[in-house]
Image (cartoon, rainbow, N blue to C red; front, side):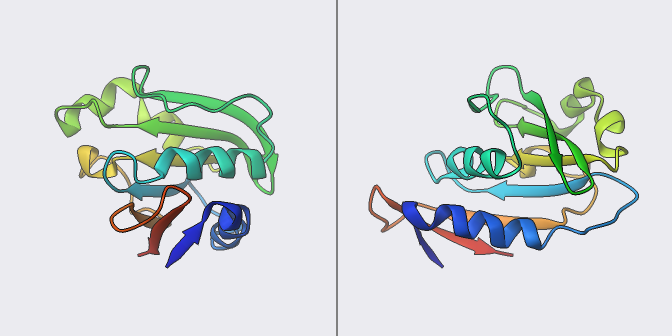
Length: 143
């Protein structure tokens, strides 16, 4: 589906409605797509929608950032950018057992394929593409 930049807030709301209301672990949203496909822009809009007031930037160099939120069952937004990981085993340095077992955590991970086998099955997978899209639009598929 083609999503215009001005339509992104509505699309984010649709995605948030798909997240399980109850759960025994963190909810995980996996974002797949090439560089510049819109993953971080989506995450920034999602962060705003769940109450993050600070500027959200991609944690490319620090790998993970956490933000306090109050959105349904969620008290924490965990934003991970796995782009710089060379092997899935490197993900363990982030101590994922702590945040993935937290049912009050909403985890958004960019480049989930870099940590294959280290995550539970995502609750939502979004595939992003900028191929053939203008600067103000992206193709986003809910997988």
